Amino acid sequence: MLELFPDTARVEDGELTIGGVRASALAEEYGTPLVVYCEETVRAAARSWRRGAPEATIVYGSKAFPNVPLMGVLAEEGIGADVSTLGELRVAQAAGVPAPLLVVHGNNKSDEELAAAAETDAWLVVMDEPGEVERCAAAGVKRVLLRITPGVEADTHEKIRTGHAGSKFGVAPEEASGIVERALAAGLELLGLHVHLGSQVAGSEATLSTIELLAELCKRMRDELDWTAAIVNAGGGLGIRYVPDEPAPPTPEEYARAVSERLYEAWSAADLPKPQLVFEPGRSLVGRAGVTLYRVGVVKRSGATTWVAVDGGMSDNPRPALYGARYSALLANRADEPSAGTFAVCGKHCESGDVLIESAELPEPRRGDLLAVAATGAYTLAMASNYNEVPRPAAVLVGSGRIATISERSGPAELAGFESG
Image 1 (cartoon, rainbow, N blue to C red):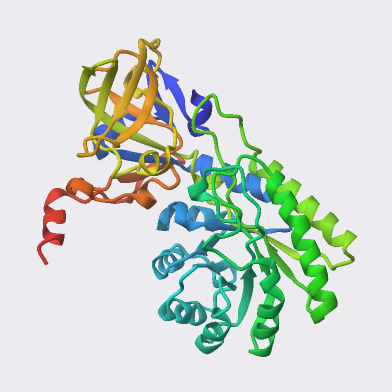
Image 2 (tube, rainbow, N blue to C red; image 1 turned 90 degrees about the vertical axis):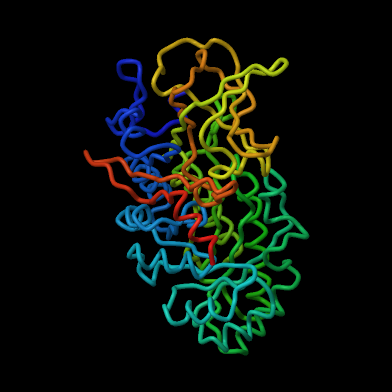
């Protein structure tokens, strides 16, 4: 089970510790629900990506958790930022991410967002549809990529696939040449192509096949248009393990090395000059680094199910309700006790679908226990809401002998004020 938790997770005197700090001490000082991030795990993931593709540019897919201190840690490791909204752009700037490492995305960019990208002099803007050619030129955007939807279905949940035919993202390969011609005629510096197959991808096979397709497309456009892609952005999407029975995906180092080697082989075979490779990982940088601590409340039997209710739920982690995401948990204050059976972990919201874990192996839970849910560093706080006026959890960063609050908890009085107009 601890393999799913951060690198520094240990069981000491029967209790879960992260970064040498007891979970009970964190919960006592900062309250629950609380998302605890391990700085060492974040840095290790960043370094794994860079070892796998030392010549590539790595930018953090900030939608996983746009947070100033966390992105500041990644910036220290040489990781840039992939942003898709004005808000994410401002967070990246506040984190100190330099403009030459900013990539601006979005399938429906506003005029304000394009103007901000131009004003910031962001390294790249990824055009997602034909009309962006003229809009980017009018906004003063300089350097662009064109996002291709290759018609490849990645091995992941249908709601987080993005590279299949009919996706709302990007353009079909057969449209690319016409858009490239228009972009060049409009005076844009079109530097290359972008592709992203989806999120929580379990392996590299689909990406490797897509690289072959991109090489063919780039060769055709060089021959027909005398245009050569100088940059290939392979997107992100590499998954992590959430439950023990899932096969382990490639490490970032393994994945980055496999993709970069295939790209250079395919470009060489097509007699194309080696392009600059870009990756946009999100989950694989911060997902395993995060643990959510909940306080157990009601424990009750209902038919064949014993429900363990915690003081959060779908407001702080909507993924199980949205697309059946699975998680693993342990009782942080009784982490060395044997399992007493399987229990269903639910939240406190007024929804039957507010179930975080359908079947968790735990010791007999008791009111006041501390439940630790692994691998919640990505797409939890980023997707959190205040449903039922439940405050968003706080988040702390543990590392280097210190604990720092990186996201504040809002209280009931603040929420009432927000709804008062």
